[in-house]
Length: 287
Image (cartoon, rainbow, N blue to C red; front, side, top):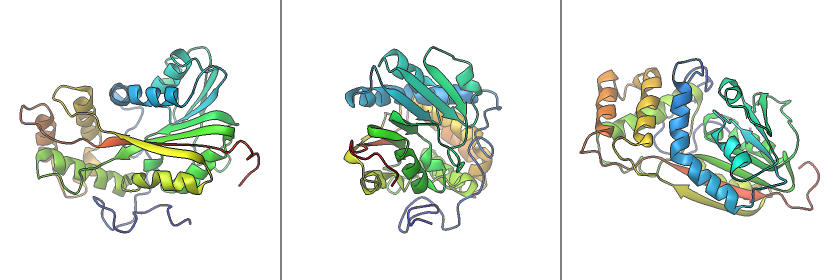
């Protein structure tokens, strides 16, 4: 096991000391078959897609590019790559492609597959993109290295995941208690670990990528916003995991959801860290 694989790094915050859970995203929590799950995903897209597309445009994604979108969800990023940026082809991968299949378009190919499968090898691409994927997977560094190997020489790896800048310092409130219980519950249930994500730039450089850089986007938490509705839906769907921590009960979660839409809401939301790097043009072999 690589020292960055699995578990919780020493000194990390917001998570218990127990081993991460063995469940899977989409099965233990956030099941695609649960009514409204596509709407929850699309609320997240409303919050984060503009930032993602702006970054991919700035990095040169456009005509002639072939792209791999891992954990593509409802396909909002894949469709905008094809439409707004004019890339040639996007292969959208998810463990369950029902939401992707509901929105077909020319140039969008679908693959129902699991990134953690040792045989996962869908080809080589100019761009490999994954958003809110690796944070939920226990062997995340190995999977990051696998995604790197799917790049063409000169290809671009772009990874985004959650980052929580306020988990240690937020004053007590219904909201902060719910956020803490969410991270703990997801860690205990499926192994989610957001304390790991600020290390992305160092890890990409360690994989031999060039021109590595990163940014953090923290959207405003405003009552009635897509972000507030996203967190409310997320907590509703993660209730069992959250209450299982002993940090909150159902009444606490309901209070946190009401807080999101209250005039007194004043909190810093978890944000999104995005890191990118390029495979050297002279690198044509396996590492």
